[in-house]
Length: 302
Image: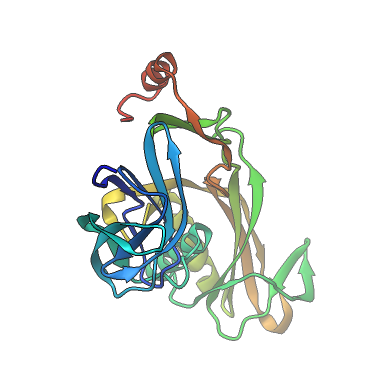
């Protein structure tokens, strides 16, 4: 058998806790192999042929954080390494500290709204998901009980489908496959408006009106809400959503315990609840399809 060589190790990074699925592609690879990451054996799941290449799927071991060499050894029938039949790819895999939890984009949006309201309007801002309302109403306006005034409470969001910003066609990407370019299609994401309600309360009418003016200024000044596309990697740039008032200010000046209040709504438009579920993965791209796809999405490299 020819000496083994490796042309691909994908993905090239994963958690230091191990368990990541990694595919090795090469030639001269025996039916039985041993794969080591930084000298630590990985679990070999399968070895097979595909389009004239040998494919080895492994599960990574637990390893210290850092870059590791990837070594493949051909084994004989007894499971022992064959002398001289091994290959090492230096620094082919990076073990990273695992992320315990990834903050959802919706959570990041709400956190950013609270941060900006605190900075631009009033420091005493809180958020609520489930709210108990008191029995005091005026023209249908419910007042949220607040421990300290003046205060602002951000409620919501409720989701409202947005057809203006939603995509109507599946997203397509040409990616590099083991045996040539492959086409990955994803369903259009489900796009919605995030509808929020702000409730403000004060014991003094003049203070409430000043707070109303501050909220109106906030909504007029902040026409877009921008966030980092990936908080862990600034090189991915930012993404922003349109922010706009929704409905009118509604006041209550004769509430329970001499409390004054108002509510208003605003909306964050065009938020993708999901990124589009896969339609089909790994479909081989013929040359005419590749040319057509690149014509639609120029700059996408195979």
